[in-house]
Image 1: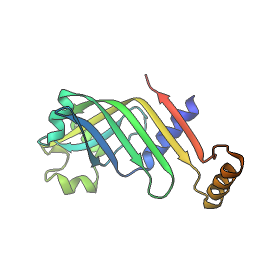
Image 2: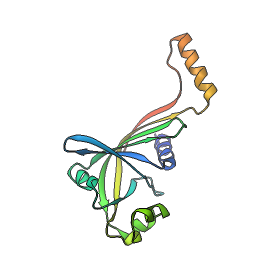
Image 3: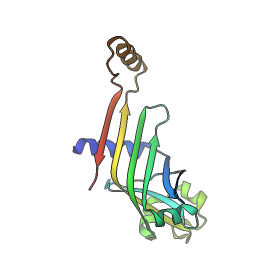
Length: 160
């Protein structure tokens, strides 16, 4: 089971954007955010603006979903998790990047910058083949044999 968790974190670290889905007045609402990770593989982090609407939504309903999709690499991840926030300056400094400077004028000490922390409770990933010839072969084989094509790994994970 450890290898599937390791594969999950390896995949998460590759993504530059994910859709974060929260509950807003009983409706599901998604927006793109840039995921950040640290070496311990326990949480996914986001630097967010304290005055954004998503903060209210998450404070009311701290369970959310993160959806990741690769650009042409046939990799997908869906994460269910529990969210919390941190104002810790040391954590903000550890996560800070030039991209964060675009959104926050005063660096990690910016009073509007806060860290959204998502601790996964469950996840599912699809690590598909990137070889076009293999995909074509699997689809052709499936058509001829009536068997499902083998397009890569699909795993469900639980955390805790």
